[in-house]
Length: 248
Image (cartoon, rainbow, N blue to C red; front, side):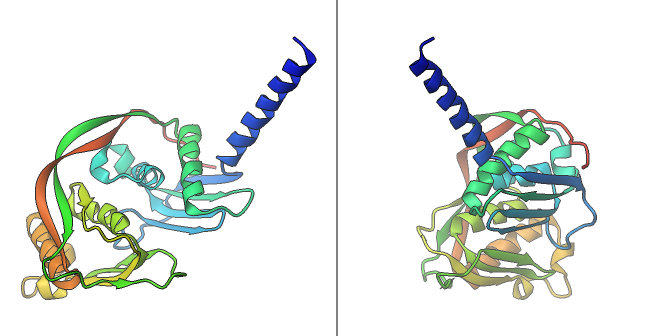
């Protein structure tokens, strides 16, 4: 092999190594969950530039965050939804959420052995649109960081897109939610279920069938958003291989 070819091969090797490093966290800690995050089906995820902290999350939660999918779009073993972990990860340098999502994909492959394929599937879904009288949302200030927190009576949202909100609502609705609002900004709002509960009922104690009706009514009344049940073809992540990591 000539000198030029050797140099070219060496350059490719250096580039590949650098690229792999750029898509990976420098430090990762994965431990069994130290405790439940109250009112949160998906635990708690917080990010700072280059720093990720996830409390009481499942592997399904990590897949949803990394690949921007919903619960119903993940098909795999039951423990993906039942085993809970605390994950702390740090990059070598400050990076944003989108880059960290790529790093989470690497983490899932390296530490959980995740391998999957995608396929289309027709599922009962909800299409989210703006109601005839218009939405009741308030656009966020430009520098508002994304935030969402649940309580016993609803959820508080700041700096959130409609796509992210649809992904969140897919959890309590137990079905895919497709954002067709056409709203492109980031929004602040409070979704309070109190006025839509039967007298004397608590939102956490209502049966699923009733909960769905309450959610639909509250979203229309509080946010000016409609949810319509339809059959939709959605892309599903089918897990071929996944392993439980050893604690570190």
